[in-house]
Length: 330
Image (cartoon, rainbow, N blue to C red; front, side, top):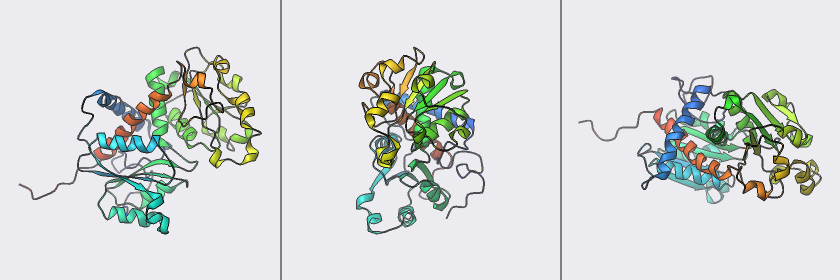
């Protein structure tokens, strides 16, 4: 079992990154270290041979209890580009489907001497539970847990924002849509706040806002045009129909009329504003195709940046430990 000391469970005694479970509580210098490391990994995708030996000899397990394409594939590709061995566990056909507990699954994988876990789970706190349970030398990355957090998405969002708009501390950022169910929104808000963003806005109907959302340090708007006025960055959130009660919205058509991002409503933002979306998009529900495919959208670059961020996080976690030696010393 883990022997990690008390305090922030994400940090090792030397204050380096031990797990990545949430943006909340991470110091600014660690976020900047990850962002700056990701800059160097962007270049690897442009090489003929897209490999670096950083994780050679390490084994990474992708354990996804929720469906995902973008997050799972970028984590898999990130680990492989760092030369790690990767196990993708199909939860639907694993022993979990026969009633095995989450921690029993982890114990069996730990018995195979794997080095790290990338976990997506429908329950908030699942990755924290695993992080408290694994051996001290193993690490855990939260790839999304319930409504709680999606830290690598928050990091790739601020990486994209910084790449296109410069220093975060000079920007006005609006996050629009289903804030209530969005772990993406929470992670982006924490990342922006940690990096000194002075004006973070959330725009949504009252039914799609969590209670006391102002305590996160954001300004709340219920009118899309008022909230978008003069902003430099707009993040549109997917309406999470799978988590939503029918009574929260009158209809998707009415939602788009009031909160969907069209070319007309985009005009209320700064003329140089960029548009982000974590995907997958509901075209015609939260965003119009003319905007999603337009010159101000940076949605596909987000995917490219997500690969670099996940490589950076994996390398940071690997760098916090000395690789195990094999064989007899010479």
